Image 1 (cartoon, rainbow, N blue to C red):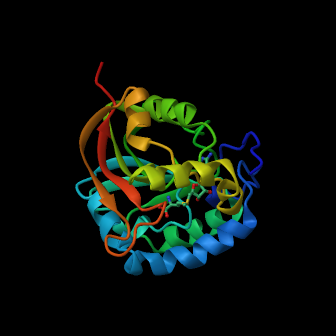
Image 2 (cartoon, helix red, strand yellow; image 1 turned 120 degrees about the horizontal axis):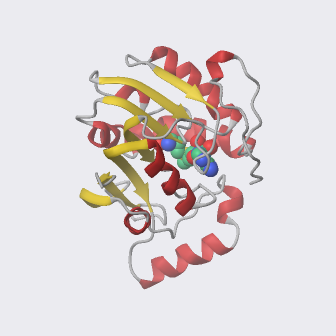
Image 3 (tube, helix red, strand yellow; image 1 turned 90 degrees about the vertical axis):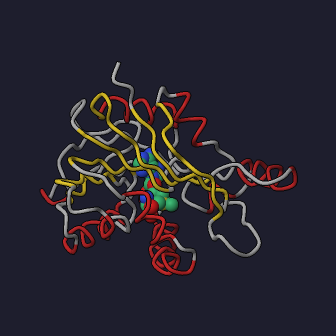
Length: 232
Ligand SMILES: C[S@@+](CC[C@H](N)C(=O)[O-])C[C@H]1O[C@@H](n2cnc3c(N)ncnc32)[C@H](O)[C@@H]1O
């Protein structure tokens, strides 16, 4: 997955042609097809409702993909800035933003260098994205920067889990073909530990399997919850 610096800070609506920070056109088309069905089949739509419940104010969503969260934002959210580096998915996100009931502005950019001002957001959303960013500590440092003190992160992330055979399998996948086949995804990361290490205070969160029933997949081990940027 080539990674280039994204110097454009203007939104997709403004018509700027951005440098693409992430380029995985085949995976993007696969994800756009697969993810729509997974909303019901894997229970992801209901989990998005739970992840976003009670949010209000200005929200930044990192790696918004094709915009599947947009329909789940509560009406108390005044604005969503949705960052998506991949061109094909970003175009689908722009289309989803036009259907959204809350105002959503879709912008190019990467988690590691967010094209927004510091302390500008009440909340940030991470869903199924920390597995794919190139530099997790740097991305979470950026999240600290753009959230106001006391701002919250809502997350639904998959990572390491299961018994020894499963964690061995996850590590083996990450070291071999999986990231190249899946748009840079890794299945053995530890998103909750990464949030803590980045200085966030973990709020309530729970571990769950997605899908909930049936044999677990290497990507099934999820955490859903809240973390906070400390006030001091
Ligand atoms: C599995 S998809 C999840 C999309 C969406 N968040 C969702 O919940 O359906 C992972 C997303 O992360 C994006 N991504 C990959 N690297 C990124 C980075 N460095 N910064 C921001 N987003 C990134 C991908 O382009 C893709 O849209």
